[in-house]
Length: 103
Image (cartoon, rainbow, N blue to C red):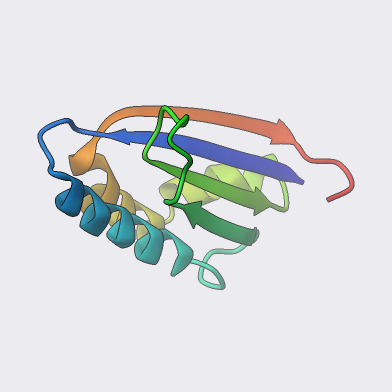
């Protein structure tokens, strides 16, 4: 299995209330992919980080394999969410993928 983690920092131009709306859209869009993409086992977006966090939202997802993660990246349902609810609003994106043995 492969764990795929992303941390996003939203653009500075948004007010706190706008950021809350954007984060809600990211969460709804990405978590709505569960059951729609082969090989995607679990997906969760956390938008309630502590004040010590350097990002605004975090994706934590688990895939059956590296191939399943690759296919997720190009899946039309994921691409639509990424291009409409995530990318236009993000200043910084950091990702970390790793083998998640025994999960």
